[in-house]
Length: 230
Image 1 (tube, helix red, strand yellow):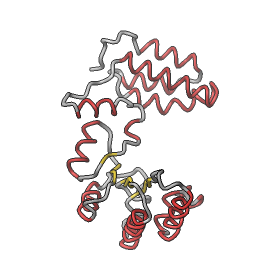
Image 2 (cartoon, rainbow, N blue to C red; image 1 turned 180 degrees about the vertical axis):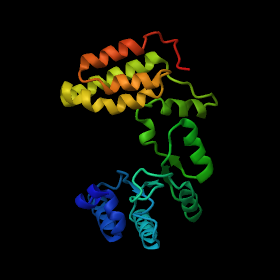
Image 3 (cartoon, one colour; image 1 turned 90 degrees about the vertical axis):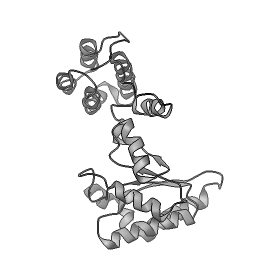
Image 4 (tube, rainbow, N blue to C red; image 1 turned 120 degrees about the vertical axis):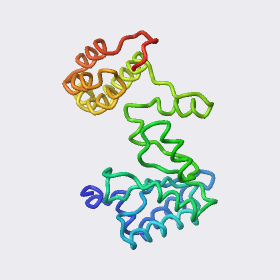
């Protein structure tokens, strides 16, 4: 919240709808018509009536100005990531605008959650955000469910391969020291898919070098593709 207010980040504009609309209008004017423009916004700055009205003012204006679609996160800016998202807001928004294309976001942690949001709210599609951190397989699992199959958990070898690739790319961008520190938060998320999650999490947190990361992977992630976490 402090950063949003101090730096006038995206959520700031939900409290100032005229500014949000002016920004979108300026972008639309300089981007070629054949290039679609989308917007992501939270359901309001806070839960007051004035801020809810401000959301609808922005939401209506961007479609009038040519937005291809919007993605609506069902928490307020004030909530940050605390408390449950209000899926009922998305349901109400769909009832109010049955013909608009818009995506829903918030509290999507599994492939099952994706289809639950579609069923419950009627949104056109679902945007996965924090739910794919440490779980990139959520998208594959969605495709499996769309094909009528049960979502398959990644093998430990698949997890190892993704972690190695993530570490490699992070090292290229941030250097070994920066990557080793930054990757801890991702290791914590990946550890949730491991049968010895608490132990693996602790080992990831202790990593301070690329070599340490490789030791953890050697210790906990075998290369046998048949081993599926249980």
